[in-house]
Amino acid sequence: MADEAETQAGAIGAPDAQLSTPGAKLRAAREAQGLSIQDVATRTRIAVRQLEAVERDDYAALPGIPYAVGFARAYARAVDLDEVEIAAEVRHGVHNSDIGANRYEAFEPVDPARVPSRALAWTAALIVVVLIAGFTIWRTQLLTPPTAEEIAQDKQEAIAARPAGVAPAAPVVQTVVFTAVDDVWLRIVDEAGERLKDGTLKKGESFTLPAEAKGPTILTGRPQALTVTVGGKTIPPLGAPDRTISDVPVSAAALLARAAETPAVPGAAPAATAPARTPAPRPAQRPTAAAPSAANGQIAGQPGGLSVPLPAAPAPAAGGAAGTQP
Image (tube, rainbow, N blue to C red; front, side, top):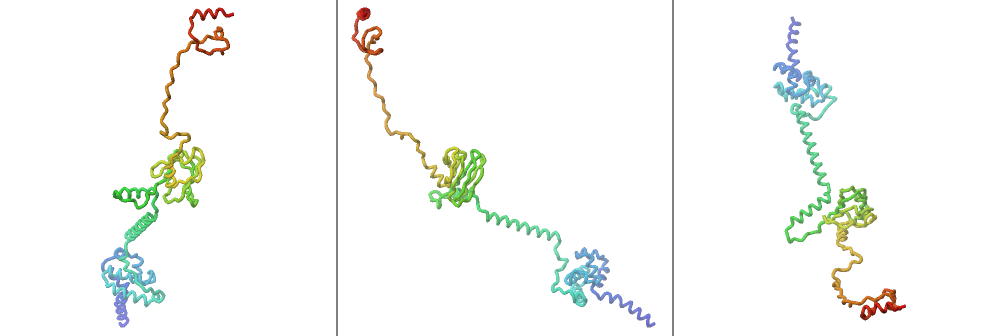
């Protein structure tokens, strides 16, 4: 009889002993609500294998002490148990076990149920990437120097917007543009020897001289193949056709000075230097009689063909005289 009573007492006390662990309490609460382990995993967003480890009180199968405590709190909240009490029991059970002696972590993670979803994490990462790309583009545009055309256009707009009668604060930078009317090779360098342009300029192509270039000069063998403008004003050719030019200054100031020079034309008389002369009228010539030729023997000793004025004589007398000569 005594053995039978002890057996009954042990059978009654076994379930109570099993419910003394936090894992057993969580499993019992889940089964009481008719939930499966998968239902709890859906609610807590914790893997099934990790929930099963919590139910078995197998904390060594979990990533660490903080995860064990956090998973147990989320499990307790899903099955309407006191999460603070369950967390305290899990922490106490872990520290009293071998895992607690070998592994100790001084912090607890946040509630796994409150960890943001994967879609939210990807959205946040995409927003960060867009912000970084926008900042990079803005920074690049901020550090990129303006081109010569942009500088000239800004200054022209500033001049147009200036009220009438206001003197300009600084001279306007004239833009120098080289346009090829035919394929031409050229080299343009500054005073430091740096090549600003070196190569063939195809027909119809243009090259704008940098506004900051100092002392630029040009070298080319076909100056007639280039049209040079300064601020839109055409400059005379830089040299004779098909004759190599070297070290010719091509700054805006030098080209404008070249255009201001008027080439002198050799042998050209100044305009209106003397009034035009009117030729004097020639006197009218007196009519002369035709002289007889020497062949007829009219006059001896005179050169042939000379005409000498003679007194008028009757025709018969003149003819008789001619006939009496031997």
